[in-house]
Image 1 (spheres, rainbow, N blue to C red):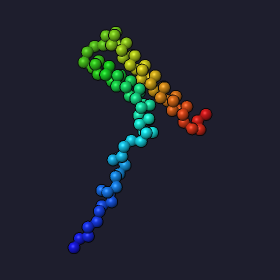
Image 2 (image 1 turned 90 degrees about the vertical axis):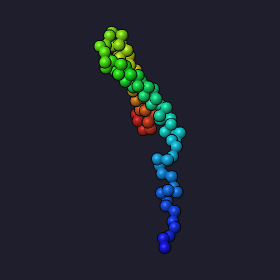
Image 3 (image 1 turned 135 degrees about the vertical axis):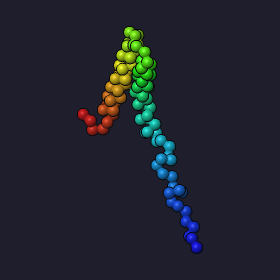
Amino acid sequence: MKPIVALQAVVTADDSDREPTPAELDAVAAEMPLVLAEVELLDVEISLLDRPATEWDMRRLRRARRRVLAARRTLTNRATVTAPGVA
């Protein structure tokens, strides 16, 4: 005769099944400008893979790179200002 016992792992939800917390959603929202800038840069780089770059393409590439750097700078400055105990 086998005892019938509920498996605790099945009854209890693990960490991978939970919804994101408001703090995690805020962190994602704060990083979204950087993600969008990196996607734009990737789009430009992909468009330049199979053809020679024109002057307009190079300008577009430089602008995309500058946007990524600006977004990184903004995100870094925001993180250092809001971090507790940072002088």
